[in-house]
Image (tube, chains in turn orange, brown):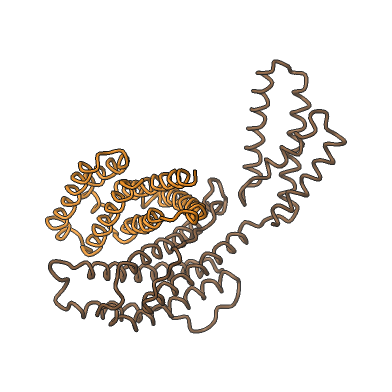
Amino acid sequence: MINALFHWMMKRNFKKLVRLQQLYFSIYLNKDYADQDFFYERKLHYLKARFVKEMNFSRFVCKKMRNNAIFNDLNDLFCVVISTGSLRYRVKDHATFEIFSVEMNELSTILAHIDKMNELKTQEKLHAIMKRFDDLYETTLQVVSNEPLKFIIFIDELKAAIHLFQKIASEI
Amino acid sequence: MKRYFIQLIAILISLAVSFFFSHAEMFLLPLSTLIVMQTPNGLVVRRGLEYFLIMVLLLIFYTWLSGSMAMMNYRLYDIGLGTLIGIATNLFVFPVKTDVEFRKSLIVVLRSYSLQFSQMLESFFSDKKSNNLFEIQFLPNWIFANGLSLMNDKGHRHFVVMVERIAEILCSTHYILQQLDPNEDTPKKMQDSIMLYQKKIITIFEGLIQVLSLKKLSEGVDDASDAIIAVHEIFRSITPDGPPVPLSKEYVLLAAFIENLTDLRYVLIRLGQALRGAGA
């Protein structure tokens, strides 16, 4: 009974992190963030606060469980997903994000169904998209952007997030 | 606790009023009082009236289903009276001052961020991995509620966004420090300058808390510019010919860590400027 409840809660929290990641992508893709930052920040706040609240509740359940690896992974994923959002205030020129628009849209779509998709196929697709991120950095961003290091950090964090998304999706 | 006490007072008043003036079910008046009192800070009247409208609509729907109009007026009267008692109690019995609550919430979260930041760095450099799970505190939800008059002010909105950003920076830093090895050469070389930076950042946090507590700002609050420049210089001196090719994982993590430290200082300085601008 507790096991089932715990897994159900972990799934809910996982979905919240997927939505959080998608929201960060949508901030990068929508040009109105600079004018409507509070509108987006409010959405982000509610998602983050709800996740933390539910994780705190899950912690009680977790104490009864022997294996809380998923719980720790979700906590890590929360921190990594939040890290991927830092580009919104680090990069001044929002137009630079358009270079990644196709990739971000595709990632967003895959993440929406990551827990239902064939593991191998998803892995291949995600790997291909991340490869395209690397290529875009090498061919375009390094030249176009004034702050290429910030994009390297972003891509690295995104890779860590995708890895954890895949890992947790295969466990829950 | 205070909130429950106010609700108890309101329930007692509504029970007394219900005893003398109610013509419908005994519970309807206290129940509507209790419902309209469940409002976030700063939205007592607006949310209370919204709940009143919802209750009226539900009553109309119930009357339509039951097909009897007999008690409709009495029930409507009870709901109206209950709403009046609920809103009035919220407004006049130990009223919550939104701006004071706002400041209190900011102080609580800034204190927790300051403590978390110093603990994070100290446990990293002492190489003691904490078994405690990372817990971050966010601002209370009512600050973000739609229609809160406080948030019509651009300055307040900016302040809130900046405070939320600190939470994000701490989350990110926590993850990075988990991945970094403190015994590697580079983090060791940077330890002194980072610890100096940490001390200065804590004094900025304390300065902000002092101003928000309406106390006089103590002398000697440094803006930590020298400290962050020193951190950047040491990082640059590690790879004087630019970033290594191909980039190592450690290099990217360190770069991300330093970006976070830079962002944190920037956000805190902006908060200080905002407070000075507001004349707090």
